[in-house]
Each structure stands twice: as structure tokens, then as C-alpha cells.
Length: 132
Image (cartoon, rainbow, N blue to C red; front, side, top):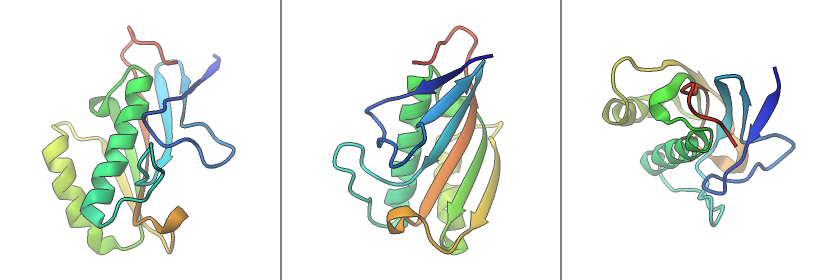
């Protein structure tokens, strides 16, 4: 099985030696997204705006692979303050439907660029789609 990088200008470019996502067969491994505007690379302000920005970025990468947020099987969420978990739950309840993806939420001391949240994901691409 070969690995295919997923690249889109609709999400922030990788800030280091990693890909925005890697597709292996019908599985796409999305790298962690922090709340950066893909055009300006400015950090969104406030937890609600950061959550929305991160999911927009994840959605853009998933779309480049021929998937959507509905195809996400697993999320790992990193929060610098676990008190932000209710805002995350509210956002997810209004943007995801049953069955919700599996999820872990991890409290961390710090994130790149002083972000309040980072999320990585695993998505299953529909068999008729092909990633870039």
C-alpha cells in the first residue's frame, strides 16, 4: 500500500516537516490543526472562534482527500484549558450528527503559536474518492 500526501491551500500550510494529511488506502490521517487562518496565518481569537477555525481547517483537508467531517472516525483534541470542553461539545453537537466520531480530549500545557486548541483526526474516505 502506498502513502499519498494530501495538500490544500484551503488550510494552513505545514509549519514543519510533516504533511497536512496522509492517505493510506481509504484511511486519511489528518495532522493536527491549530486555529490559523490559511490565507493570513493569523491566529483566531477566543475559544469559540478557535474551535470553528480548527474544524474549518480539518474540513478543508478532508475535502482535499475526497471526504468531509462526516467521514471522520476519530478525533484527538488538545486543549490548554479543559474548561473549554463544554464549548467544544456545543460546537460538535451543532456540526456533527449521530454517530459522532470517537474522541479523546487531552489537557496540555501549551500548543504552537499559543493556540488554545489543536485537533488531529482519522477519516475514512468513500471508496469512490481519490485524494490528491
